[in-house]
Amino acid sequence: MLRLIKKRQYKQESAKGKIPIRLKSLLHKCPWPVLTDKPIYIKQGFDEKKHYYTSNYHPAIDLQADSGSAVISPIRGRVVYLEYDIRAEGNYIEDLGMDYVLPAIPDPKFKNLIDLYLWDRENKLVCILCHLDGTSIPNKIKGKRNLDMSCGPEVEMGEFIGRIGKFPNCSDEDRKIPKAVKRIYGNQQHHIHLETHYYPTSSETSRDFLIFLNEQRYVFNPLLILQEI
Ligand SMILES: [Zn+2]
Image 1 (cartoon, rainbow, N blue to C red):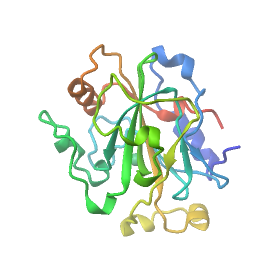
Image 2 (spheres, protein in one colour):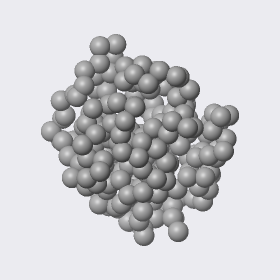
Image 3 (cartoon, helix red, strand yellow):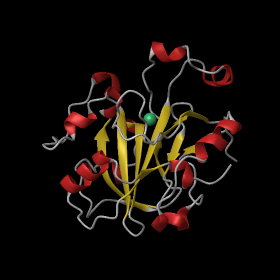
């Protein structure tokens, strides 16, 4: 049974935003993507503001747990892309601008971290899980290095897809860690960033897909699909 460090915070965070109407059948139906005996901390919640990755904007949730914790797929779908973790450094928007370049050159600090893109075509749902340990990705998924929505290994809801990687410590953030979290995780910052987008567009070209995600047109609070706690 999954536990959270701050339950009141969960209530506030899960009340943010609305699930797209066509995804109603998934409301609070999906498993949380982290398996651990320790309580998880929602390190950062969903932010609805529409300024892509400027200062505090966060169109996702960050789930903190130990590095090495198992990560499972919250949805049934296809792995359409694995990428080096470039957004942790804030250069995502340049890389995915109108002339996006793939693959991007990874920052050495984040070199073993991988982002995994899942596409549930039936529901038109995209889940992006960031900061996985690159060495932990199962063989069946590992080779998916080019974005192509028309092919990729299928994963079931709840299937093992990797482990939480080692996120570098940022000293600025140490001061903001609540005591209850510090008791369990110390100054560590290891977490999974989970982003969910509704993608109703019929085009499945990589370019349209990335531009759409970049525009954040139908990004929504991932806590709305995760099981209620
Ligand atoms: Zn995040």
